[in-house]
Each structure stands twice: as C-alpha cells, then as structure tokens.
Amino acid sequence: METFVRKIKMIFEDESLRRRVLFLLGALAVFRLLANIPIPAAAGQNLTALLANNQALGFLNLITGGGLSAISIVMLGVGPYITGSIIIQLLQMMSPRIKAMTNDEGEIGRRKITQYSRLLTVPLALVQGFGLIIYLEKQGVLLTLTPMQMLLNVIIVTGGSMLLMWIGELITEFGIGNGISLIIFSGIVSRIPATLGQLAYTFDVSQIPVYIGALVATLVIIAAVVYMTEAERPVPITYAKQVHGNRVTGGESTYLPLRVNQAGVIPIIFAISLLMFPTVITNAWAAVAHGNVQAVLLFIQKIISNGWVNGVLYFILVFIFTYFYTAVTFDPEAISNNLQKNGAFIPGIRPGTHTAEYLSKILTRVTLSGAVFLGMIAVLPLIMQALTNIPSLTIGGTALLIVVSVVIELIDKINAQVTMREY
Image 1 (cartoon, rainbow, N blue to C red):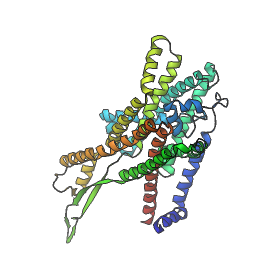
Image 2: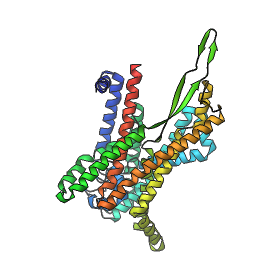
Image 3: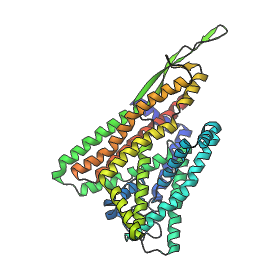
Image 4: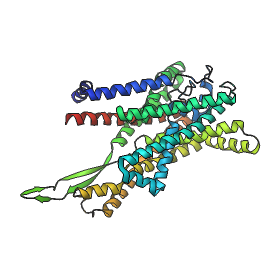
C-alpha cells in the first residue's frame, strides 16, 4: 500500500508524468464530448430498440461509448482504423518488401507503415459509414436523405473516425498507454452508469441466483485474465565471460520472459472489428438490393447473425489474431541476433538460427495456451446468454475482457514511467 501511495504521489509531483496523465484525461474528455454530438441526419432519434435486436450494432455501440446510439459524428469509432491496421499487417507478413521496410529502415519504415494504415482508413471509413447510414435510413431511424445530404453525412462520420484515430495517436505519443485501446476502454467504462441503472430498473427478485452467478463469473474472469496476462515462461540466458585486461566481465545468468499472452487485448479488438464490418455492410446492402442479390445477402446476414455461428467465428478470430499479433510483435530471429551480438546464449542451444528456432518453438507452445484462453473467455458470455437468456451478458463479457486487459496494460505503462524516473 505504501508503494502504491508513493507512486501516486510521484505521478503528481513529477511535471512530465503529471502532464502525460492530464493530457490523457483531457483527450478522453474530448472523445466523450464528440460521442454526444449528433450528425445532421439524426434528428433526435434513438436506437435503443434496434441495438437490442442487433448484436453487431450492439458491439459497435459498445466500443464507441454510445456514439452509435447517439448517432454521433464518431459513430464509426476506431473500427475503420483497426481494420486498416489488420490489412496492412497481413500485407506486411505476406510481402517481403513491406516486411523489409519495417526491419531494415527502422523508425522511418515503421512511420511509413503507420501512414499506409492511416491512408487505408479513409476508404474503409467511407464504405462503412455509407453502409451504416443506408441501413439506419432503411430502418426508419434517420430522415430520408437526398444524395447531397447522404454525401455530407458520410463525410462527417468519416471525418469523425479520422479525428478519433488522430486523438488515439496523440494519446500514445503524449499520454500514457495505447491510445486506441484507451479510447475503446473509456467508451466501455462510460456505459457502466447506464447499464447499472438499467439493471436496477429491470431488477427481478426471482433472478437473484442468476445475478449472483453472473457476479461470481465476473470475479472469476477478472482473476483469470489478470493471471494469464501476467503469466510468463522464463527462458534462461547466460552471458559469456569476456576478459578485458585484468578484468573479467560476463558470466551472469538471467532469463528472457515470454508472456503467455503477448498480444494483450489486441486480438479481441481485432476480432470484434472484423466481425462488425461484414455484418454492417451486409445489412446495409441487403436493404437496397433487389432480386437474387438481396436473397444472397439476406442468407449471409442470417448465417452471420446466428448466435452459435457468431460465437464460433469469434473464437476462431480471437485464436488466429493472438498468433498473428504475437508473430508481428515478437521476432525470434531479431531476438537471437541481439543475444548473439551481446555475447549471450541459451544454455544447450547454439547461437544464431538454432536459438531462433528454439524461441519460435517455445513461443508457439506458450501462445497456444494464451490463444485458447482468450477464445474461451470471449465465447463464455455467449454460452451464459444461452443458459440465462440475458442478452447483455454477451456484450458485458467482451467489455470485461477489454477493460481488465487495458487496465493491466495501463498500470504496467505507469509503473515503467515511474521506475524510469526513480533511476
């Protein structure tokens, strides 16, 4: 407790840390303000009934902090940027040229990759914004729009999504933690008072056992997420002895920590974004298409909206993205080269290629546990919904995963900043 109080005191005493924390809070306050500014076509409409019956829109409303239910200028959230990042990272793994840009050009190459993600966000936001507005118009939520009004509103929601992307990058650079994750986190947390109020309004004494079970499950999930997020697989490292004149250096033994869940909360955010994109587009085009095209789109929409199909897809996407993001962020070859340059080696393993293969083998096994765990936790609320018939548990479970993971990541970032200043 004393250590916690000391670190909090240091945050407010250190000018640089205090400035970062205040910038973070200010940026999140701006996001909450934007989430309550409606687009011109909204005309004071409410999406409560529509969101209750459409899980994809419910997820989108969740990560925009109610931006969709308010039909605000940030109703798309950071979904287009995340989808663009996924596409660029896939190209990075498939294209040697793009991969070399990151590995060989260093910081300049990473800036180019980030710029490509930003540029790709624009067309994705235009397509998703157009599809969502068309869908809401056909549902009678928005006013009937002329072509010019449609263009204006699409440009506004696209600009809102780009603005959120910019705010997220500013938080990453001048605040603390990952800006995109924190924007999604703040959107979820902002819905807590409304959710508690709704639960209190619909409270049913006969459902007390269900509420208790949900509370116990929530605590168990929180404990499990914290445990798996902090779990590590230590790989022993030994530094070779070196003689410099009369001095002998090296010979120390340490370890390389491989996290069970290297990817953190990113696979869940990626999976939700990828699940939402085709659903929203299919719903929109099914409303305006005719004949065989409409029949095909309605069939796809029916399959995607099925709870069990959605759950299986959710599990598979979380599983795949856990491996995918781990492969992007952790390069065994680069780690092996760094160890070799610093005169370090893994006992019993030859330096160079053999070390890279050994690290890759361990990482694959460790990530399997993390991927299965994240996938199971992600679909557990769907199972609970099927057993209890309470739809909010589905969104609540996903929100819980994101909130706990982002809080742990934020605490680690703050600790790193405090520790750096102590040294």
